Amino acid sequence: MQAGDLGADFVRAEVRGWIDDHWDPELSLRAWRDRLADSGWGCPTWPSQWCGRGLSSALGRVVADEMSRAVVPGPPDGVGMMLVAPILIDHGGDELKGRFIRRTVTGEISWCQLFSEPGAGSDLAGLQSRAVRDGDGWRLSGQKVWSTGAATADFGLLLARTDWDVPKHQGISAFVLAMRQPGVTVRPLRQMNGHSSFNEVFFDDARVDYVIGEPGGGWAIARATLAHERRLAAFPPVPAAAAGRAWQEAIAERTAAAEPHKWYPQRAGRPDLAIPQARALGRSADPVIRQEIAKLIELSWSARWMAERAAAARAAGQRPGPEGSLGKLASSKIAKQAALVHSMIAGTAGLLAGPESLLGGTITEIAISVPAISIAGGTDEIQRSIIAERILGLPREPDISVGIPFRDVRVG
Ligand SMILES: Cc1cc2nc3c(=O)[nH]c(=O)nc-3n(C[C@H](O)[C@H](O)[C@H](O)COP(=O)(O)OP(=O)(O)OC[C@H]3O[C@@H](n4cnc5c(N)ncnc54)[C@H](O)[C@@H]3O)c2cc1C
Image (spheres, rainbow, N blue to C red):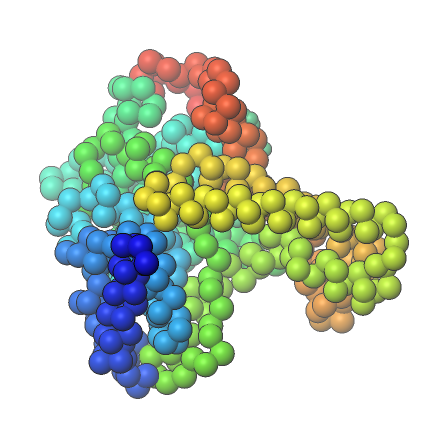
């Protein structure tokens, strides 16, 4: 037996013992998560003073396996745990960590990401929301768009420009913004698939109290956030054996948090439905459709192996890197190929919506949701540029804004 195995066995026994002593399904979700936060077992790879235990990613997976084996709820899913808290741990000061990390782990507060603007999506560094110093804090004006979940979030991870006299990447700062205040207006947008996941967010002299890291250091935080975002996991299914008060509250919380993401499985193309649908509609012997299904499986399996390789690299302690762009691009290709396969199988019936259409409208929803995956979290073209520059070592895309104060650059 190797030292690593001994470590895993020790950790497994520790978690099991702790769950036996502390889990009670009739606890409130909040009381259970307080125990998770106190013990560090809810976020085992985080530092021990910030709700974690400082374990490696590999041992973190052992803990996660034990938690799911014991069917206990974990910390909340979504942006707060996956993006904001890791950013605060790496870049925030102790005051900021003390104020926000535990409350994120217990689910007391929820988050949204306030990066994209009407004139700054791919060119995120061209953002123009403006934060100006005001006493101990800052005053914010401008607009964001595409802000998922902003209508219900308590706080936003925000990028704003604080210096217009330096080149564009250097004048950006990252902030924590309280969403529920008079200077912040959130307007939901309606998408072509009928869902309403995104919002426009307007700032009119809003108060911002917390800067993350140093003013002007926001671009490094933006890049770190996007690297985490490219591996943002789907909401895990609720285990069949989930029961008791804590789980009831966790399911209600998860249902509300997942509302903006309800259509995300369709956005990914639902490759899992291709073969069952081909069989159900009698198209599985069609030679052209079979070719396209085989292409879909070929893409899906290679992407899965690539993701497993990236996960193994992370488990070995490496930070998320440009391989996230390969995975992101692969998901777009898979989704588009799946949408093609579904439309070939369904024919014109795939254009009908409503409960009486194919799979209650799911097939149509795939067709009109798949384009989003090529845009969210950085477009396909931007992923290709990252791959060209950072993996293949090709020359960088020309940037006319280099070395020029932002106020003299034409943007938007
Ligand atoms: C489902 C979904 C969820 C989202 N959630 C959030 C969120 O929660 N918070 C948030 O802040 N944002 C969010 N976004 C916004 C997303 O990050 C942006 O839409 C994305 O970065 C593209 O920016 P844009 O829409 O301004 O398009 P543009 O940047 O205007 O791009 C338009 C077209 O030009 C191409 N293009 C632009 N620049 C280049 C270049 N240099 N080289 C080659 N081609 C280029 C693009 O690839 C694209 O095809 C979300 C988007 C989607 C679809």
